[in-house]
Image (tube, rainbow, N blue to C red):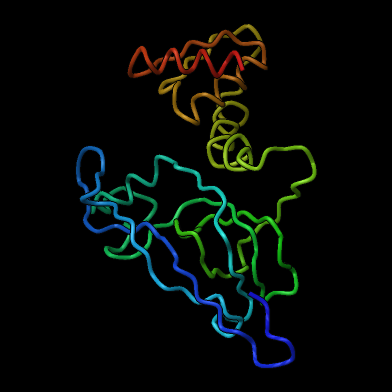
Amino acid sequence: MGSGGGGAEEVTVVENREWYLAAYAPEGVPTSDHLKLRTVSFSLSAVAIPDQHVALQLLYISLDPYLRSRMSGHEDGLYAPQFPLNKGIEAFGMGRVIRSKDIKFTEGDIVIYPFSPVAEYSVVPSTFLQKVDPTVGIALPDYLGCFGVPGFAAWVGIEVLGKPKPGSNVFISAAAGGVGMYAGQLAKLKGCRVIGSTGSDDKVLRNQEIDME
């Protein structure tokens, strides 16, 4: 992806796989009739990257509940707009900078981007990028889990809103979900007795496995 020796920069084009929304799913679980994968040609040439933008290679995405609401075709009561049809979907993601037009970011930087296209490669504005230090001993996926949207939501619920005292009972609804699991752990760390509800026995068993890890 670099330039040719002394001459004009080599144009780099990759076959980029991306997920897009082909049809809205008002009810139930979205299927391959709604979410589809396609391959498109994508330029990573420096001339194709605007100033104050970077080219990213996607590493991880966070599959959060709000994404489902953006596939329903309904706007009423939602804080996030619907995904446009036949356009790539977005999610809270983490990627590696492979080319930069912003002096604050260099090739190889690991960054978090809250509106990351769910695609192998993308060009995004640098405004909302947050660097991650991969040498501090924190697994990269944790930045999208306990340090990401689910963990932050759990922290707000327990530490900011609930403020339970040691020894008190804390009930966690949807305890098998990402937010519920972290909320339960935070409450236990505060010395509370935690009671959780889930939608199936399988989810209970999975939660117990996580609790033991």
